[in-house]
Amino acid sequence: MRQVLKNEEVRVNYHFVARATRVDDVTGLFASQPLLEGVLITENGRKSETLIGIATRWDIMLRAPHGR
Image 1 (spheres, rainbow, N blue to C red):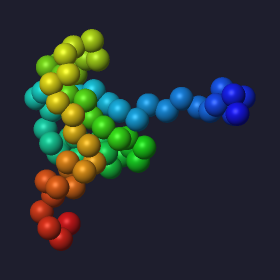
Image 2: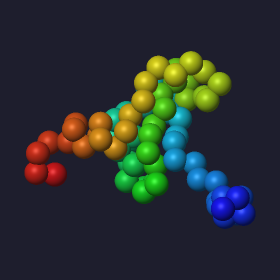
Image 3: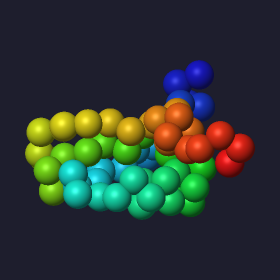
Image 4: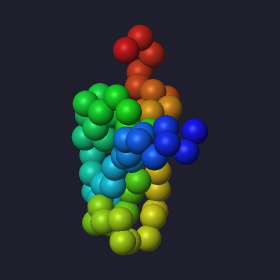
């Protein structure tokens, strides 16, 4: 089992964005990156900054008008 885990590729399933990033741009990130699980929001989109929000696929789905 250890060998399997050791050989498992490292996947980045999150992306940092700035506070001013448009929701449409976040939606585009989820659309273009199928393995993306969360978008982490900081003031300037840097991982070294304090986290001020998180957006998930579910958040984007809830925002979409019905029938889309």
